[in-house]
Image (cartoon, rainbow, N blue to C red; front, side, top):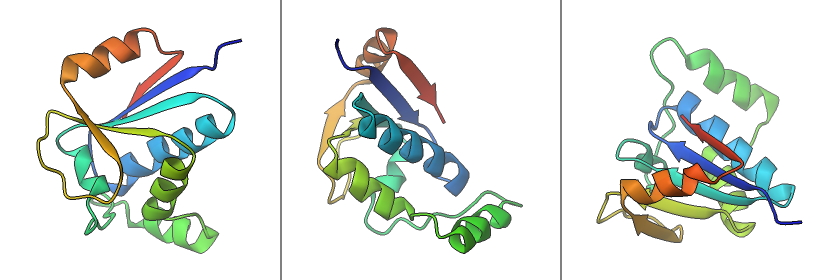
Length: 123
């Protein structure tokens, strides 16, 4: 049986947009799925080494709740995902200062990949 294919497209860098796709990516790759985590122009900030996960206006409760619960940070989730083989793809960006292994692709590539995915979600 072929592994399931999961494509997650991160379009924003606010905390509430960054956390869900990383959680899904780690969960999916843990269950044996092939996972592509693609980052759009605004979402790519998550991959920067100086990224600070700031919630949207009125969303400070989320940051506090994640901290109080002892949930992994964005950087920890990226580390786990990278270590487990999640592919990081940057869409339509030439230079992204990051320590993560990234592939650079055009938007049409991610749309084609999502067409035959078992799960495609964007945040």
